[in-house]
Amino acid sequence: MAKKTAGKKVRDILFGVLSFFLSLFLFMLSLGVVGEISLFNKSFWIDQMNSTNYFVDKCDEMTDRLVILGYASGLSKDFCEKIVDPIMITTDTETYLDDFFEGGTGRVDTTAFKQKFISELESYIKEKNAKVDQSNVDYLVKNAESRYKDCVKIPLLTQIAGYFHAVKKYLPYITAGLALLFAVIVLVLTFGNRWRHRIFKYLYFATAADCLALTTVAVYVSINGGLKNINLQSRALYQMVVLFANNVNIMLWVVAAFFLVSAFLFFFLYRSFYLRLTSD
Amino acid sequence: MSRAHKHRHNKKVGGKSFVILPILFFVGIFTVMYIAIAPTFGTLISAASVMFSDGENDYSTEYKNIFVPVQENATVETVTNTVGEPEVKAETVEFPHYGNQFAEIKIPACDIECPLFMGDGDVALSNGVGIYYGSFLPGYGGTTLIAGHNNTFFNGLKYAEAGQEIIIRTSYGNYKYVIRETAVKDSLDTTAYDLSADYENLILYTCYPFDEIGLTKDRFFVYADLVEGIPLEKEIGEGE
Image (tube, rainbow over all chains, first blue to last red):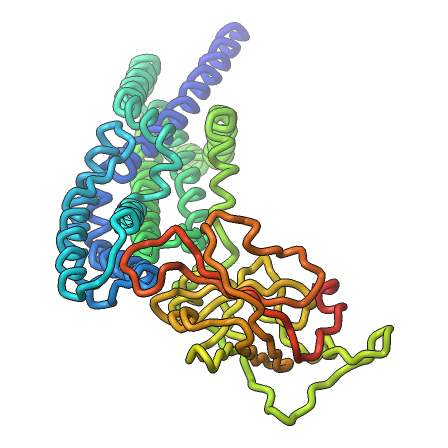
């Protein structure tokens, strides 16, 4: 009798540990899936940009930068206002993101900008009959190009590029591996327990813990206002990043709610199977 | 099974473990995640914290104007220093922050009259001229280095000559300088200005040549000495 009780205890501990690992893998899997469909998904970035009017705002910011450059180099405001347009910014930002998401450094193609700037500058010089020193003009073009590059680039991505590419490369494998481990543990729980109510008990432990963990993360992000206090020079980028963080947080809430519903479901299944068993 | 027995079982369904274990698992998840993440991403997480400020960013391009002109014949509140000379009382001065317009500069012979800002950032140079943040305010007894664009507010500097007057009007007093000399120097020539000078002097500079399209590598400097104006009480600088 004592031997049987000890064996039952060991089995309970073993399944309890398995249940913990199930919750851990599920939590990581949830974060992995949220990451895959948001941070590491180029289309999600573009969607956030479109939702915040990013390209139009970026166009205005670049025009402002050119106007300031114009003050220092003898170019009129009218000239600076006709160089960039939202289509040019959209195309170059998408090319930049393509390059970055494909593992590159995030090269900005300035060809269209440079062509437009140089052709407009030549017409402007001709029209004003202004005196120029070619080396000063070259320096101006180089400076304008550099400003355009800075405008299109997303500084956050440049700073985290190393981590980003490493995680992006392995994330699908990690996610698949976690899903596999999850399936294996569920199978062990299913075939290792004679009584079905116990399977639901362990599944309840795992999903309830994940619900708590994800809710904590989501609450922490919500309390801190997402990324509202992030320091970014570009207003367009700031708006995009704040919306991005809010949407990721909403995803976390949704996953937490899913685990809450699952936990309730498993609890009631456990309860009904347990009661059916005890009533027999 | 009797009704009473079934009821007792019914009450036992669940129990403490159904609350305690999920909480323990939750603590365990964060512990494991912390142990796993901290060594790899710890540096990144620490670095990320410097990217946040206490409040939301202000993207306004508006600037604060704290300039209240001191009338010609008006007197400012002064104190007497150790050698018996008057100094503008520190408490009466509103020290300008970066980006504030705090004065006006006027060079009648060059037809220049424009706002003067603290700092020479984009907003300042788009709306007037600005004092290099590492130099001194007028009245401080050091070098005041002022930058402006040659195609806008400092275009008139092309007419600058020795002997002409420069007037800087601030909220704490008016300062008059006389141009000593002008010079064209390379933009990287650090001998063009001495920010450690222990006497009141003014240096204006802009890109050179004037009225040319393009970014130039030379700078046009105007050097001037103070001829009139009450010095600031030194405690301001030491206190700030």
